[in-house]
Amino acid sequence: MGIEIVPLGESLGAEIRGVDLRKRPDKAVTSEIRAAWLEHLVLLFRGALLTDRNLIDFTLGFGDLEFPPSKLLNLAEGPRNGPKVPPEINVISNVKENGEPIGQLGASEAAWHTDSAFVEVPPAASILHALEVPPSGGNTSFLNMIAAYETLPDDLRRRIEGKRLKHDQTYTSAGDRRAGYDIVEDVREAPGPWHPAVRTHPETGRKALYLGRRMNGYVEDLSLEENEELLDAIWAHVLQPKFVWEHKWAVGDVLMWDNRCVMHRREAFDDSRRRVMHRTQLAGDRPV
Ligand code: SIN
Image (tube, rainbow, N blue to C red):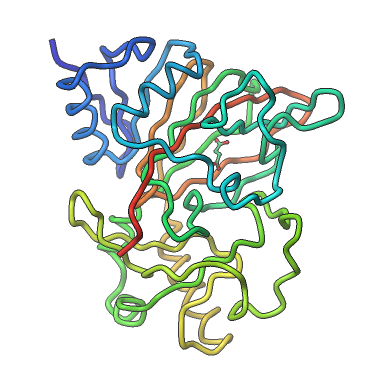
């Protein structure tokens, strides 16, 4: 019996039913899931609390694991995993133990972003598993950057197509400056890679806007004024509710998103409530 695919959002997102992620899906089911992922861009699996091993095995079905780039770059943006959590896993949490955070991003908003667009070869997928969730807040929203690109007004498309964008490494998506990084005085000088502002998906060939995040974005060759004006206009187009699907988490949920053509945002939540998520990532290609 095949899997059941239930579309969720108007623009992206689908729930996959009939798969138990506590056992690694076989090749046929994995390729059905991959096809659904490439079509719907974000997949939701409900119901089972997974071990880190389950999560890693599921991720390996789709390719190579990416170690969290923040660890590879030695960006001191949060705690290293304790002995109980394998190094392939990134803990996203506001919880503190013995006064020390057990994970990254705290409880404040994580603004719209693409995971690790600030490295040369960002991950293809992020797979996030909910172990503990607060009763309200902390929802995660996803935005279809293919649809945003395809509906871009002609004048904006002409101005951004073929340009490269600088992706600043200085700040996390929660707006915290990473240890060892200076305040960015001039976005043209910010540390970080250049990526095409419109990238072509390596598997589907579809084009998507690739903005990374708004803060300190810089389009090559523009004056600072032109840069702010162009990026503001593009972001105003992108942030339309019709491109967005929002997920309210339940314990056991797993979300797998295509980091090459989807941005996401995590809303703030009450820091006195616990939220613990474990994340794996799938290795990607250099954006072209
Ligand atoms: C992230 O922004 O990568 C984390 C998303 C979340 O905590 O829901």
